[in-house]
Length: 524
Image (cartoon, rainbow, N blue to C red; front, side, top):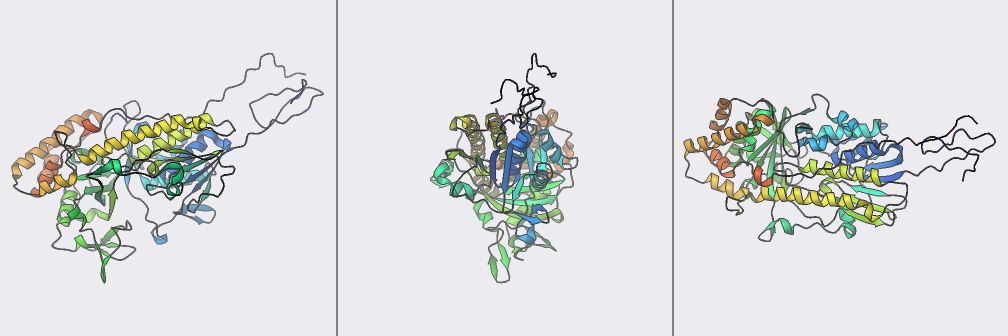
């Protein structure tokens, strides 16, 4: 304790200045930093780490782990295809309630001119006061934030998978953000419970969808394709001067997704998520040198339907730069926060917490909301001593809200109920569309009028759109069966899945309050 001759001035810190004559210098005890490990260095893990460092500065010591990284000299970089890692090339849409809540320095790193676009309209999660949603590539987010973690914040980056220690001594927080198939979450299932698929099942079987991702370069302005995407549920195009046209498939169509090697089928695109790239008139896997069967099979039912989807968005086969496939489904988590040890808490973030069906996509928005919620919660609650379970009640509440809001939205989109509320999923709608009879003139009229209605509805919420004649040309270019599939698939059910969104607090550095020093003299 300082005696009566000691004057402590300045903000709370490690040093005492200006003792009175005859007094003594008494160093104030420095608060130990908050120690945080992050399992997973994808967009959510890195965004959480950079946000928390922006908020707490030297008050937090962070380590981020990811097996997809490698050391290159004195830096950590992403492994590439030559290292067995296929980088994600998808374009994602960040709602303005999300991107505007990130710390200013994170926004400055991400939203560099030429690295994002504003394609989608204003809406409940992108109010006019904050701006329109922004399209951005996942790969750019990963690259920009990995550089920021090293160059700006000096965060310790570990190019290895996270392994839970035998003892949690000294660790306050474990943020688990290593994806939908999180190995860290599974290793700690005794704390978090086991994810359940029961709630997202039909007739006792979990409902999954197989999707084809067709990466293309675009020739038309990104915004022009929005009414075409919203008018049907077979194809979704999210672009940033190019992007992915995602195509929902029936089980029969999915059975055609086969890679052929010299000696027959190869476990490739259907199992390892490989990308098939153009090689002449064929599409070939870089890794296995296997050929995408539909691209060479003259009897393929799927390939002409793929080409029709490209044509719908003004894209040709020569504009395709890659094809991959993935399966979508959902599971329910019982909780997102767990006490791992007396002084250590674990948190599920991103896809490890809420893996979502993407139609329409909300996965990264939900992931970043979870990261922002936890970062702000830690900023408010860290006082240099052990946390209590009650400190995270508000954050756990946000996570449960996100799970309910986003998964109920996604589940409704998967079930696609008809006007009577009876589920009529995409497979049923596609099969109905592929069966006759076909009245081409009526189908063209129906789909074109649907596109025009959507264009009119969106007109004051986004930038300029194409002419009616351009949209008619896109619709009329379709094969008759494709037209019927699009009509049967229906427009996006925006009313049913719309409404209030879960809003998380913005990540803003706490204002430093200057102490009041009444009657304090600097002259002894």
